[in-house]
Image (tube, rainbow, N blue to C red; front, top):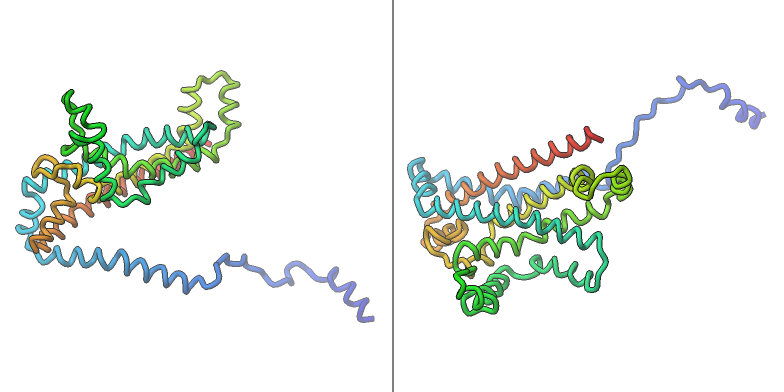
Length: 296
């Protein structure tokens, strides 16, 4: 009899009699602990040092702050630092895209070696990179000795700064664009070709919209990395005030003179400008993604 009741019970149960089931929350085990650790780590490594930077800057009056961050020498370093960083990041966008394209779309001897060589600036100490570039591009260097007799000087001036920033920023673009190219749907390119599109049209209307957000991300990372670069630049820049002196060197000089408030003031301006530029780049990325999503 019990078995008969059990066999007929499911057929008599109405849907509204069943308890409502809410969708299960997809939370990793230990979410609260990991979130707390993440916030603690973020505060300890990022927020507390930045807060100390701002608090030290607030010890200056407005006139002292303005005098520290708007002196002719500091303004010249701003123009050089941000200008050279922007130019180097722009060059890296084109060079990184070409290099990523070759590594993804072509097979050739030594491909794995070149792919591993892209990460060399990540592993190489920046001071070693600066010394190596100086040994290559100086007037008595392996390359510079053939260029300077023709009036081409690549070391101890602004050219050397841009070259050093290109060197340390290139991997960011390559490693950002490369996986996007690997995941791109080649069927869309083949369809565009079958419909009569040229290679330039296929790249413009099919490939570029897919990789544009990655290019912007690589540009932002290379630009942010170049703004704060110090070790690879000081050896090849010449460090001449008003000519080839970068802002991080200005900050180091003020620290060596025990002008901590002046150093933090200049660092605060650098932080503010970098933050605004990154916000602009992130807004461009969001706009590009929404535009691509709307078209699809």
